[in-house]
Length: 118
Image 1 (cartoon, rainbow, N blue to C red):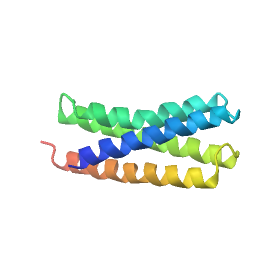
Image 2: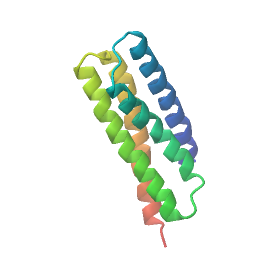
Image 3: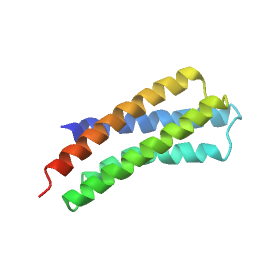
């Protein structure tokens, strides 16, 4: 159940990241850092999706751990973009909230999967 929620949340998050990056480019504020946010923000969902096709429990946990790392990287880029006025505080708050929710679900899922390992 949590995995389906994670897939939905991470896909919505990726859509918001793509839209934000497109908007930044259109505002002519884009730079090389934009690709960093785009890559990490969309990688979260890609790794969660890929975990559903894991070959083992260890592979599943590994994919979720990669997604978690990508969440933390995305947090970094969002904060940097806010602090340099590339995004508004409102944009930051909305995306940070989404990312935090995904991160908490990933941590819970990883913990559960590790505790049920044989």
